[in-house]
Length: 396
Ligand SMILES: [Mg+2]
Image (cartoon, rainbow, N blue to C red; front, side, top):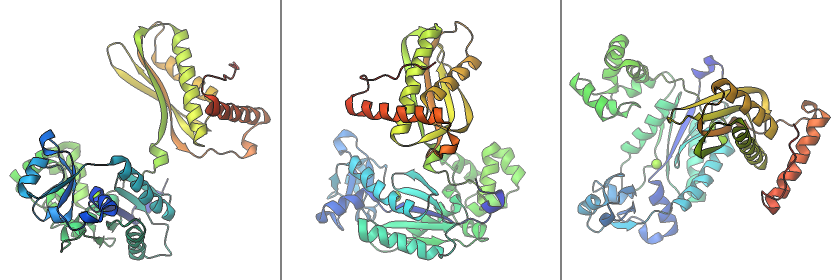
């Protein structure tokens, strides 16, 4: 975790692929280049535009627009059915290039990510951005836009500004850099709805108040914004000043492996619940080891017959990929929330705060190292021969 002072002095890069689905389609079909086309569903099936080429955008076609309306704007619009498996494969290739640069990557959608490049001090951010764009263009034939700033909020808006400012018929290939200290000044002239948290409702309310730009928000007193919009108002005001201290959240911090079971009938007896948790813990452990991962937080999810659902979690001193440890922790958590004989509709267990397991021998006594090795062998056999063939005997 970064020290709070470091948050004030970061370099965050936001990358967004330009017209991603369409750009991928162009790499597979040269005939589409320069033509007005859209990836999406058929107009007679109430399809919408998922992505549209720059030639189509010139006529006002936008994503999320009904395809029937897009066709009225551009009668000769070509409609290409989406190939989402292909897009996610290409997305992985792009993300792999980002991970080559730094571990601090937060992917926020199929074609967008934040990178914290603060530690790449030996290189200038503009060079990093240009090389990244060139790399993705030359090797994957995809256009992208980049924004760089001292935080995520301003970096993302910088990307959008770069895209909007682009002239010409092709993809924008935007690159916008907001120097540290100039965040608020950069935001001043921009429309208020470019800020996160300003949806159509808030935007309408702001307009009524005579607030049109981000600068207008910044000029209002903070306590007035809070009075009018609650907590959201405080965030709006801070964001309008260009302040955003949210860290990059890497995949390993958000990733979790979990299992859950909904029972056909509500379950009251301890034995069935314990057996279910044991099986789930085994499966969670197996998935962790298969991917060479381990996690520090064990979470229990439980749903009562009236559908109220709660979860309890506990953080272990060290990461685990061990079935028994996950199971024992889950049982302890269950005892903290469930009264004896209380009926349960759903139960589940998961492990999060995942990373690569620490496996220095010193951390394992001979016994548990042996048990881990045995577990690995069992996993491999199960992988090869199917899950139901071998069961490790319950050791406690
Ligand atoms: Mg995009």
